[in-house]
Length: 269
Image (cartoon, rainbow, N blue to C red; front, top):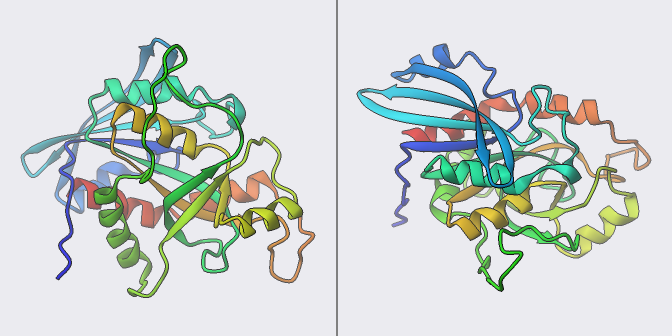
């Protein structure tokens, strides 16, 4: 018998685009017996710079819960700060200072593995970062943090259950993948995607593992829900020369919010 261990989330952080927070949250939450009590935009100061947060207070059948939403690019459109210039240390320190029980990151990725077609929403189980760019709070002293299991196991179990149910997947469907971090802001070449696939990457993106590393240093439970927005370069069925388009990629991510919503409810339940 498999026992699903659940984290109790009274203060949940969400990192991602703006689509989820722009949903009619009052109506959506009320369908599940949850009331939005307060919604406030704040700017929190950290030693690494200011960070804008959307703070939402909920009444879940008499239990007060808090959502802290962070747009990682610090822009309402999601196209603000380019990925290689994101201030991840400020972002993650702001989330840490919010005294969260856990963080659910939402990521748009390019798919490499055939079992992760555009439109599917899965989980990051591992990451590979060969960019050579450090992501740490420890610039002045030698502190070595274990990332053997980079994502929170209890959260991933809960999220996998929500994603299977919301997408109608059975137990045989693969749900967990390895995220390959690329530097950007350019998309990858066909040759790079082929090499990444051979080395174990199932999907590509430009941001998330840097957050995961910092979360580990802060001992913050962190999981990443990944939306397959497009095939990686050269993987488009029937057209391996198709150019990637940022607007098309973003549109696909915003169309797949229902599974993300299910994940949010699962963590708050």
